[in-house]
Length: 370
Image 1: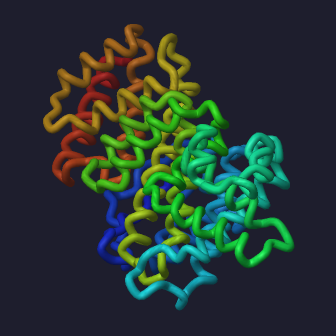
Image 2: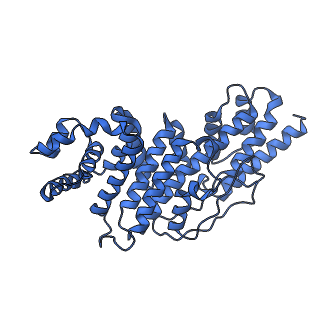
């Protein structure tokens, strides 16, 4: 057995990996596995994105079904596009519209082949846009957002036997749509939540803006993730958006590569933590304590700048009124703390302090025969 994945921090200003520095490995929870750090950011991205194809068993068990399979497939697709485009970036590092259009059309073909119903209500507009004098005006009047416009125009461009003038007209309209900074997020929100996903988009927009601001601590991100309604689907949508944008950047954008990989790693780390917390809750089987409760408690613990045994004792008594279950609870929570990545703590001293408090309180409970 090996511990929960601990993934090296990626500096957004460089794609050189930083060493993995952790305290001595704790005794792992059952079923935990580890992914060793890659030799470069691009290799790390391949490892992250192509996990399923490579057969690595690090994915949390709770999200290893069809939904995540689709996400990983899309991530692998986008990274493959990034690799194939090496050497073809623009001199200013901006996204290449022809490559982005090609990626979009590939994605649309995949969606049409595997989930045709998602595109049916958009396809009905294709005959009309051929006749519309103002493409963007027509689509706006129909209430389509930038993501839906991109899907519609991409589908229209995928038709055979388009005339040169007709193709240029559609490409110009699509380029104008792609000037909307949120078009990819709107597109993947539409694919995941359908035409009624406006409320989901607002939550995703806020999360996306915080992701790209680079000013949020990892543990604060985790707290935001925990509070998301329908979080697995929202995080999946964010993963797909980031992965698509990653491959749409010019290959010279190494800083962007490192930044996006860091964002993606944060989400995967949350999934791993979530999985472990749910398994701890099932193992403890304490009335009123579920996986989300364990996550909330764990995040509260690692945000304590200073901690005494008395604080942990009071917290434990609230969560586990029955003294007979307190030792097992403290032991499991202590193991989760040890498995948290260094980024979750203020510094090594805080991590050491929290770990020592858990050890001291666990010893106290043991002396009491609990």
